Image (cartoon, rainbow, N blue to C red; front, top):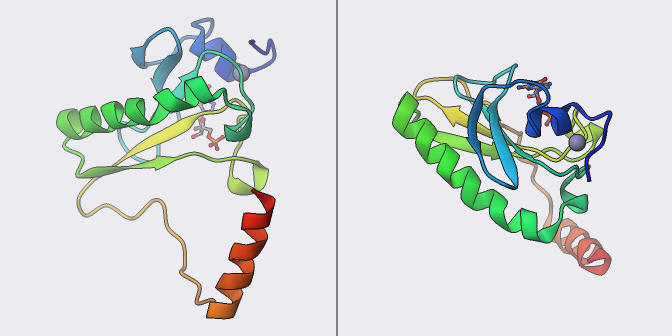
Length: 138
Ligand code: 5GP
Ligand code: ZN
């Protein structure tokens, strides 16, 4: 299914031009217009899925191998020292386009960290309680 109001549906299916790195029957991989670093790419499925929880498992199974292929090419072509794979679900998690996509963000030696958090220090009891709540929801 496509969503006629979705910009990533239009880009993924070639109705809106993009800098395309790779295309097959399931995906288009493009350069992000607001890159976190040089070469920042987005993997877009051609079908519309709102987020990871809506993603067809058969499509999902192909995403990480494709991410590895793109990341390896970024390192080879651009001299990146590594890359981050980022995927946001929900507004509070930073999702701004509600068509599932994966960010592949090259990382260069000496450049500032892009994906960071401040580590917390939960007690053993808190970890156990949090773990139990999540397990019960699976
Ligand atoms: P999100 O915040 O939803 O995980 O990521 C959306 C990403 O899409 C952002 O990094 C933003 O720069 C990128 N983006 C938004 N609109 C366009 C567009 O029209 N073309 C391209 N190439 N990237 C876009
Ligand atoms: Zn879409």
